[in-house]
Amino acid sequence: MIILLLIIAAALGLFYAILQFSIPGLWKFVLVVLEMVLVSQLLIRLYKVPNELGLLLIKSKRGIQAIDAMAKRIGLFNFMADTGNAACYGLLSLVLMRKSNSVASLIAGLVVLAFVTFVVAPYAFVFLFEVLRIGSVSQSVTSVVSGTDYGLLAIGAILLIGGLFLFMLAGIVLYGGIVFVALVKTLFLGTNAIAATSSGGTFLLPGINLPFFEGIIALIVVLVVHEGAHAVLTKIAKVPLLSSGVVFFGIIPIGAFVEPDEKKLERVDAPRQTRVLVAGSTANLLTCVAFFLLFVAFSIGTQDFRDQGYLVLSGMAPGTVIHSIDGTAVNLENFTAPVLPKNSEVTLETNYGSVVKATDAQGKMGILIEPVTKSTITAEFTVPGLEFIYTTLGLIFALNFVVGAVNLLPIPLFDGYRIIDVNVKNKAIVTALTYVTLAFFILNFVPLLFHS
Image (cartoon, rainbow, N blue to C red; front, side, top):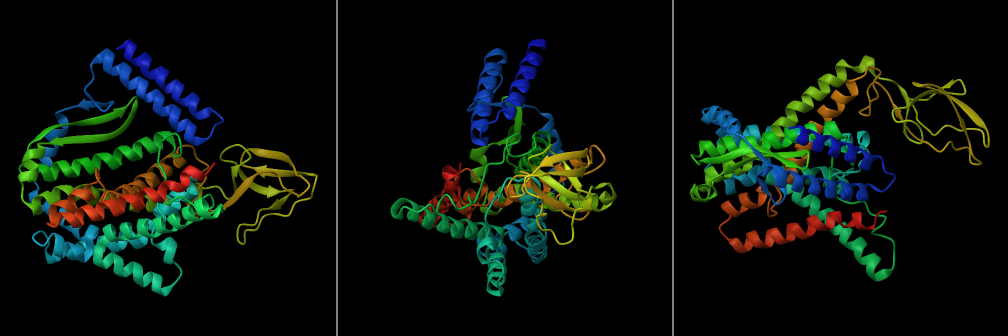
């Protein structure tokens, strides 16, 4: 046990040291991956830990016991899955899963779909972009057609016809097309179009572009509810669960797992298989709604503990909020970059006290700022611990939406692929849809290769 604790402590220390290196985030990611591969192999050799593809599988029967208890509420979980069918596939669910839908589950699903898409999703993307500064996680249809009545009608029609599945598919195809055009211009016309194009996706990694502890907690919630829902519906479908547990990559928990008897699951009829498969994304969407409401309640309840001013995003100590510049209070109502004297010094009153900054020949201080108030989604708290809770709640609801929606894409290893495969008899259509989706999905990430 002492040796194990020493290994964990050393791994944490090296992980923290890597994050402090002044190198691009991609290189940090590569170094962290290499470290975790080495740690995993060390633990496998020393303690014979069960593993798959180098990932450590910590198995327990307690999870199965909890799943057995929940699976007794058959009606509730079947209704949840059928509601998820409607939310994830809209009216298309009446065609694909015609034996699973009821009027009540269809209406409930469309209500969930509308609330998640038009209320929760915008906050999720704003939170990930503004609060975490990681860029857009997924360029949705709204990035292409927003701002026009026809665009809103198109979004509404897509959602009603095909739910989140068709919405996500349309989003990656549309933005993938934009990336493809930029790539062609770059390769054949000698322009810099692809470098100027934002990626349609990015990798979400605790410690790299997500806060480490908050990110770990959020991802654990995402994966536990996802796999737990699969497991409960698997038991309800009378398919045995072989094992359950937690997955570690080195010392980093990256998920939970349940292992059903796949051969028996494949022999179950299509409606029950569909319920098992769609349960994961459904649980993510419902968890997203629940934590969004908690996030809103927490935001409202802690407004009096928020700081106001110009939040410094880079160029000064993290978390610095500027309250005044040379005695003049910052302008929070109509934000414009302050005009400063050139080649001079200015005194900033901040939450860390007075700071003197020099300006250059253009009157710049070399910092990036953003106004924050008691109502902006970007928040800086005056009480220790509140920001941790705020960020964790935000990450839980935002990542549950992203994972739940992306998982519906018909791509191998995603639940969306198996849902389509189970319900579409023409396998040529399934194959074509899979290859097209995979091609455009990859295109969304191509700009990352051209960004420094």
